[in-house]
Image (cartoon, rainbow, N blue to C red; front, side, top):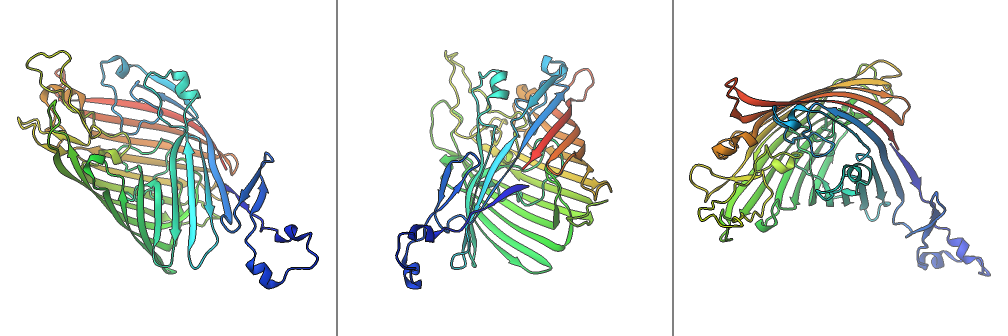
Length: 478
C-alpha cells in the first residue's frame, strides 16, 4: 500500500505576469523548464526539477511485535539461523519476552516520465535495525534503535536492457520477486536465502500476453574485499501471467500475483589469510551456490475476490561458502585459536580477513588449506484465505524449513564439536486478521530445533536444542 503523490506541472505562466504579450510557441520551446514547487504536509516548500520526478510514492508500515521464547538464545528480535542455546545451560533452560517496534519501515519510490524511450526510477527504504555497540543497554536497543539502510538503488529502464545500481536484494534467490513465504516470523527463515548487497545488475524481460521471461546477471560486492573479484550472480525467471493467485509475502497484506518459477546461481572467490600469527601469502578457494524458487497458485483467485485461494511457495538451495547469504547462518563455526606452544602472553591471535562461518581450515592435520563450508536448505510454505469478506479478512499459513551442512563437522576440531550444529528444522503456523485494509493483527507459533555435533552421554544421541516462540504482531500499512 502507498500514498501516491502526483506532482503538478510547472506553471510557467506565473513567471510571465509582467510580460506585455503572450510568449510565442518558439519562445516557450526555448525557455528553460521551470521547477515544480509543492508543499509538504508540514508546509515546507520542496523544489523538484521540472520533468525529473513525475511520480512519488511514499510507503511503509508501523509495526509492533511481542515475542515469548522458551530459551534466551537470540541476539536480537529475529530467530533466523542463530544458534539455539543448549539444554542444561541457563540460557537454554529459561525463557524471555521481547517487545519491539524495530521492524517498522519507511520507503520512497521516485519515477520519471519517459525520455527517448528510457525511464529512470529510484528507491530508498529504511528500518531500525542499525548496528549498536555490544555494550548497549536493553533500553537503548529497543527504544533508541538506529536507522539502517535496507534498499538504496536506481534503475534505468531502456528498450535494450534494464540497469539496476545500488543496494537491493541479491539476484541469487530472486529476492523481492514474490517468492517469500507468508509468515509472521522475521525473514529470513532457517535455510532461506534473504540478503541485500550493493550491486550492478543488467536484466531483460521478454513480455507476452501469456508469459514473461526474464534473464539477469549482476556483479555484486565481493564477500571479502581482499579477493579483488566481485561475486557473480545470474538468474532466469518465468511468470505465467494468466494463472494468478493470492500472494502475501512475509507478514505483508495480501495481493494477487502470477505463477512464477526462478533459478539462480552465485560464484565467489576467497583469498584468506594463512593460519598463522604472521600474515603471509593468501590461501584461495572458490564458493558457489544454486537456488530454485517457485510460487504456485493452487486455487487461483482475482485481486477483487480471494475467497478459498490457496498458494504454495518453495525454495531449494545448495552451495559452498554462501552462509552469509542466509540470515545469521554460521552453524556456530568460528576460526580456531592459534597454537601457543611457547605460552606467549598475550597469546597469538589469528588475523582473519573474512567473516566467520563462510570457510574453515581443515582439522585433519592440514591447517594450511581452507574449505568453503557447505550448506543446503529447503523452505516450503502454504497460505489459505477463508471465504469471509472476499477472502481479505482472515487467512492462515504454515511454513516448514530445513537447513543442513555436509562438511562443517569434519572441519571442526573434536574439542569444539559441542559449539557447532549441523542441522536445523523449523515450522510455524500463522493467523492473519485484517481489521481494516490498513490495520492487521497477526498470531504465530514457531518451533526451531538444531542438532549439535557432539553426543549426549546420557542418551547416546546427538544433542538437540529447541526453542518455541509465540508471537503477536500488529501493523499499520501505508
